[in-house]
Length: 405
Image 1 (cartoon, one colour):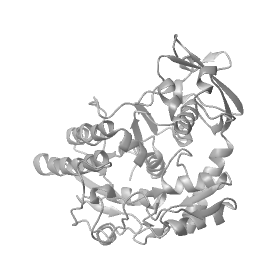
Image 2: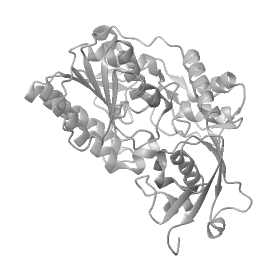
Image 3: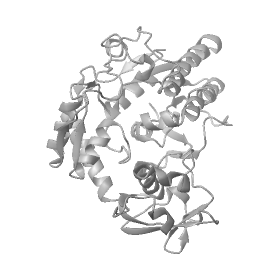
Image 4: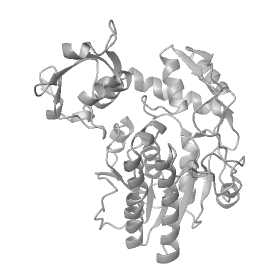
């Protein structure tokens, strides 16, 4: 890759997106990241913005993007992530996979650029075949709890294939399997991040279904696969993931041993959320020369170090809520958490006490108009809203903006 090459990354402010942008910059490319910033801002984004060959555009890719600057490649990653988020917001998820994908493909078509779209192992649904080769067409319930995400990704693949056949666009499709690593949000509910955060807090990791297996791919390995796909003309889809599965029990014990705190308890239920999937990576190995090279021990150690640093930089947040709200919360509960932004603090509060959610955040995750949130004398709406950063010891005061709040 030469410095003349320009890569557009949708979802470039996310966990994988920021890692991809950094890797592309390290190779000498110019990079433009497009992201709606609907989620929390990662510290990695702030570091990227200091780079002279990096540009950031805040934009929702589900809305057509007028883009006149030539690009040589488009990497389409934009999508809600995390089981809880995609289950609770299936419309937003489907729009990202449909309208967002069409808009990204249109940019690639207009500029005659290579485009790589990131699908998901969820296209296999609850698989009846282990491991899954790309030829396996899956076992998906189009009306099930994960259907918004699964069908969004299946549409993404279908539309990408259609653009290749009908418009001659140079497309590639990759299917990731459980990518993890440093830079994941501490509020991330996926298994590696959730286990690490719990262990760092010295708490108990409850494991339901310890023998359930997950394929866990370290983020640097996955990004290497993405870039290899970008450099090729292979249409895919190609599985990109760790071919060797790891049991949830093994992962929990490894995390506790690596962190040096926390305990593991096997839960009463043998059930565990999510389908067991492991990829057959024969195609990626033969066509791209790609195989993961990071061991689980190395990957977990790096993830623990990164999340420990992130947590140490967070503020200690105390919530001062109206007296009427206190009656809705179990008596004696201390309203305090660690967070690095207003958004992450309020998400903790509303997830811990769901009865408060309608008083603070809309279903779309925005501040509701009938409550104000203050830091000292400053209304957070006059600062940077939910993206307002927090450091040190902070008190957030909630005040109804109108009667009846």
